[in-house]
Length: 297
Image 1 (cartoon, rainbow, N blue to C red):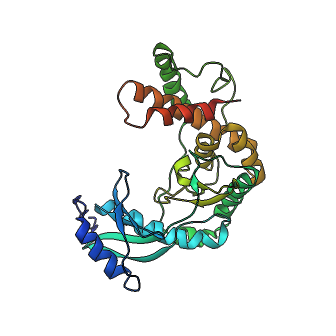
Image 2 (cartoon, helix red, strand yellow):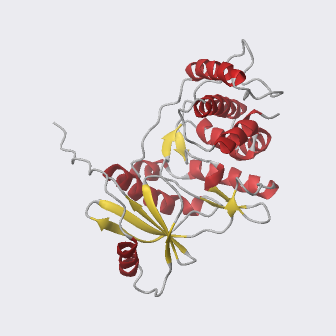
Image 3 (cartoon, one colour):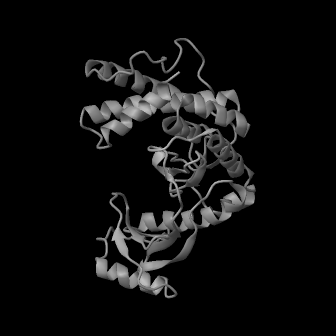
């Protein structure tokens, strides 16, 4: 029988006064730090702390496990990647069994609001190379989930159905390339799994005024899996053409790029159709922008 502990049930976020007391305990060397809630949803209660920090509190046992793993992962990859990753300057449990971390605040604007330039593309290529450079023993010690590659044929069928629904709603990607060539062989799943960020949305990429990638946020979904998944995330965030340049510079094969592009195109069609029909609550302009980026060119 499994001796695994019973997962902690979700709890309510702490009050502002409790958060201020927690910050005082975690950062005793600081004083008079302003504490304000971040206007975001999600599984964490997230607070700005002064100008330099972000406090993230987990609200259930599963999220606590993922956050502790994320803090360890970020520390492990920092020497290997040319982009900033948040550093945990203080961590612990804010209530028994539920983790919290005070992270350094990275500079830059979201890639949803600021474009990645040529130097930024090289930054992203270096990040992909750096993740693959982490020694296997260190990757294994992190205890990350291992994710099996997704089946492209199943996704294709769902995406084709979604495109029919989008056309009926006037939302199909008009004048765009097809997501796949009829009769073409789809890129096979890779034989080797790699360390992935696994959620490379534009909101998780911070871009400097010079177009450099100054930071990559939110490593909580990191897994060991199909390298095409990070390619797909970049296609949503910076577009198909820029993503192809990044993958070439990172030393990924054309098959991995093509597979990632198909994942991005299938995913965007399915998610936009679900949103239009009320089964997804993601911002509609964001989903349209992601579809345009993945399907362009």
